[in-house]
View 1 (cartoon, rainbow, N blue to C red):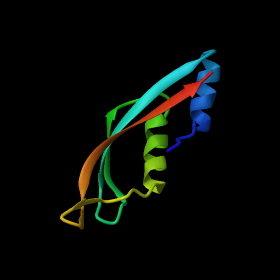
View 2 (view 1 turned 90 degrees about the vertical axis):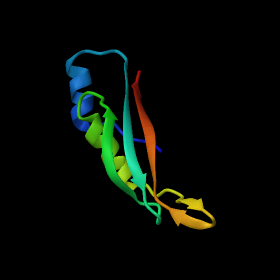
View 3 (view 1 turned 120 degrees about the vertical axis):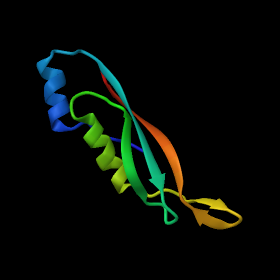
Length: 86
């Protein structure tokens, strides 16, 4: 899964004259029985609007649903998205 830097984030990094930038966002979400992400929450935040960028990325993603006794079930998972700019 790949989350992209927002234009705002790139602008802020450049404005602060950062030569390298590294941040992570940790999100909690429920993967429903059809593999769609629901109830996305930020567990650990990243600067420069990257949380919203992470949420937007996850909303487009489809997961393989978990199964129990051969039937799909909803589960809560945590995902870390890393951002690096060198």
